[in-house]
Structures are given as structure tokens and as C-alpha cells.
Length: 152
Image (tube, rainbow, N blue to C red; front, side, top):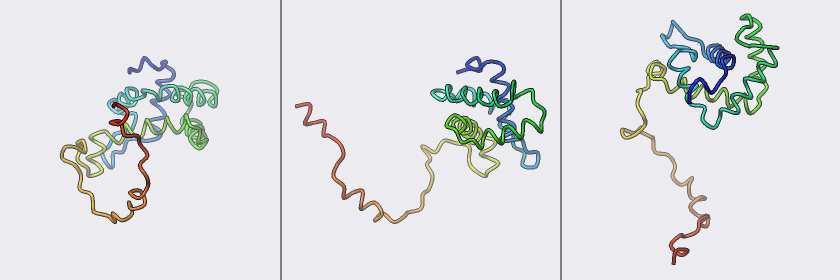
């Protein structure tokens, strides 16, 4: 998916929202969510969430009375806080898309002391827990159909 999936106004508003939600930090030497690479990942990751993202951007535009990207800093901060507090599904989806892309950026992972690699094949060490907690699940009857019986 490309930025063409969004209008120019939507893309500018999303870029501003991302930067306001997660600003860059010189102290920790990490980019903001409006960083060129992170923003490209955000836009490229909408998939089935594109409709909700566009709905959220439209709602924010209505709340702003025009383009959110054109608002002064104080008004934009106030509206964004109000918008994010609404708790609507589309607002939650928008926040999730921004956060998931931000926290999979290699620079961000390194700043958190994590290796920037996929979890497999190397894997992660998981401390052993109390396996008896699964006894209730094991005791349930099976919830599936045996396909071998159907094929005969």
C-alpha cells in the first residue's frame, strides 16, 4: 500500500498526529513516529485497517473544522488529546497502527536494549511457569472435528 491510499490532506494530518503522539527524543537519540522511515511503514501497513484510519482522520478533520495539519500547535495538541480520549474504534485502530510500526523500527528497539531481529529462528528464552494452570484446558472435551472420519 502506498501513501496514494490517502489523500494529501489525510497524509499530512496523519504525519502530524504520528509526530505528536510519539515525538523524537534527542536525549535518547530516537526518532519520532513522524520519521520518514517509520511513517512509510505506517502508511504501508494499513491493510484492512485503511477504512478505520480514514474514518479516524475524517473525524479529526471535522473536529478541527478543516485540516488538522494546518492548526497551530496549542489547538492541535488540545484537539488531539480530546480526539484520542474519545475511545472510538477507529481512533484505537489509528493509535495501534502508529504504535506497532514505531516499536518495530530497529532504532527504537535498540534504544530499548532489544535486539533488532525477528523472534525466530533464534527465539527468546521464556522462564518456566506453573504448567498445572493448563489442567483445566486439558480436561475439556475436544472442540474440533476429526477430518479423517469425514474423508472416509
